[in-house]
Length: 114
Image 1 (cartoon, helix red, strand yellow):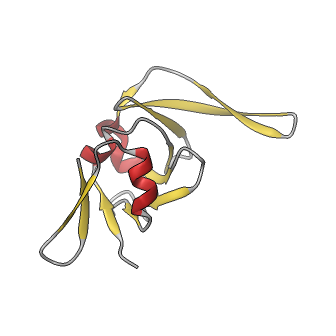
Image 2 (image 1 turned 45 degrees about the vertical axis):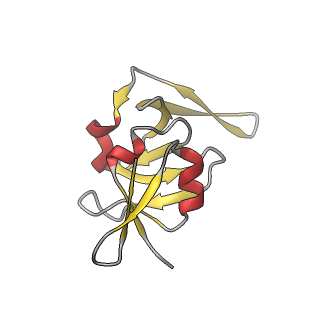
């Protein structure tokens, strides 16, 4: 299984999907920005509503712990704030990011770039 590092440039084109930070906050991707969401438990289901003003992805990129696709599946994880955001499901990442390409690095690893 090949692990692929996701860069913040890659996520700047994301048009769908969500992420969770190490502080347990959820954000939704929208046109290169992140909008914070709050969860409300209603009638047995969690409903997420936008809250606050949009922020740039670069501002909180190092705090992203979990990256979800538009269907809510986990597609990338980060162990600590100083480690890389890694994915093993590049097909799902392609569904989130428009114009995505994967470039192989000299050491045999790959990095997702746009």
